[in-house]
Each structure stands twice: as C-alpha cells, then as structure tokens.
Length: 247
Ligand code: ADP
Ligand code: MG
Image 1 (cartoon, rainbow, N blue to C red):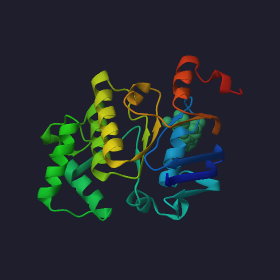
Image 2: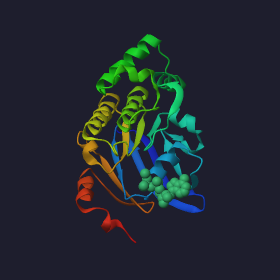
Image 3: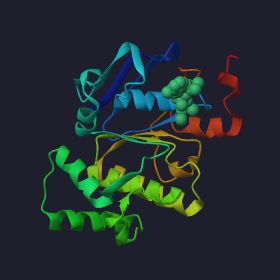
C-alpha cells in the first residue's frame, strides 16, 4: 500500500497581478519518483517555491496536503522541518557559517540531535558517496563554490536531512558530465537508502538514467497538459513540447 506524501489540488498561484499556475493537480506517494517537464517560463519553479512557502507567490486557490497536514497553513521553516526539501536552481551563499554547521543546525531543527562525533562520521560517509573532499565541510556554505560544488553541497544536504519529499529544481543544469553523474549517484542513494520521494524538474534526462520514473507531468503555461509514466520523458525529448503548446 502506498502512502500519500503530497497532494496538490486545484492549485492556482500568482505573482503580483499575474496568475502563473492554473488549477494544478499532483499527487506523490512515498518513495515515488516524479518528473516535471515544461518549457522555460511554464511555472515549474513557481510550483516548487510556492510549495516551500515563498511569500512572493500568492496562493489564489487550491489545497495542498503534506503527509496529511495542511501545508499552506505551515510557516516556511515548519515545511522543511516536516520533511519537504527544495533544491534551488541558484543556491544562496552563506558567509560566516560553515557547511558542516549549517547541516548540523538544520538537522537539529528537525529534531535530530546527535553527538558531534556521530554527526562527523555520518557526514564523512555521505561525502565519500559524493566524492567530496573533507575540507568542504569546514568552508563557508557555498561561498566560492563552483557550480558543480554547489550542487554536490545540495545533494549532501539531501542525504543528511533525508526529507520525505525532495523537489530538485534543475539541479543538473549547467553541470559537466562528471558532476551530473555525482548528482545522480547522490539522488539514487537518497532514493534507495531512504525511500525518499522525488519531484525532479529537469531538461537533462541524464540524471534520470539510474532512476525509475513512476510518473511524468508536463506543465505548459501554468497548466498540467499531459501526464504519463517514465516513457513520456523520452517522448518529449524526441518531439519537444510543441504539440502541447496552445499559442
Ligand atoms: P519555469 O521554472 O518553468 O521556467 P518560472 O516558474 O520560473 O518558470 O516562471 C513562470 C512565469 O512566472 C514566468 O513568466 C516568470 O517570468 C514569472 N515569474 C516567476 N517568478 C516571478 C517573480 N518573482 N516576479 C515576477 N514574475 C515571476
Ligand atoms: Mg525554473
């Protein structure tokens, strides 16, 4: 029996005067891997950020339940504590806070306290999976990190925080082949060892090679225009979005 993690019902979202998402419906069950595809400007990032509770995005109508709770009623930090994780297209830099401390305090906020020794051991294990040099842990978060290093840093957070649902917003964009490989190794590890559910927003299907895609959603002009299984990803890669475009 599959357990429902996220249920988005008729969600409409606007920014300023402009409506971006129109009646979006989406259900993700425990451990499932979903892909969200769509042309630039379709509203994919808007969906991710609105779910995280970014106040710039106004919920015009609709409902969202996350593990049975009303997500839209939760403060942003409560959403991540509840197990929702969003990896941004452009991660922020946090001077003055080491990467290790950042992850440790995020874990503590989620109620996961462990000794420093245990934390360091767990961190090292995950960093090894991602082929990250130990020194990164002591550097300020994302400050001076290359694009590839920032992505590794995000995937490391994913492995350490083991959320119930991770939304990866073009985590693989602009990365070289090796970096995409590392990201997909990390994502696969998260999925396999922690039964984490995924909503992957991507144009680069290399990241999907090692994952089984359960469901694909196609977003065009703020509306879900097609749904399918993993084979829809290949279909869109071959033929593009044209047949779904109305204008
Ligand atoms: P995608 O991620 O699919 O490329 P986005 O969600 O980033 O699309 O953007 C969808 C539309 O909403 C675009 O037309 C974009 O310009 C607009 N938009 C997104 N965020 C904002 C914002 N903060 N202010 C104004 N317009 C925005
Ligand atoms: Mg985007």
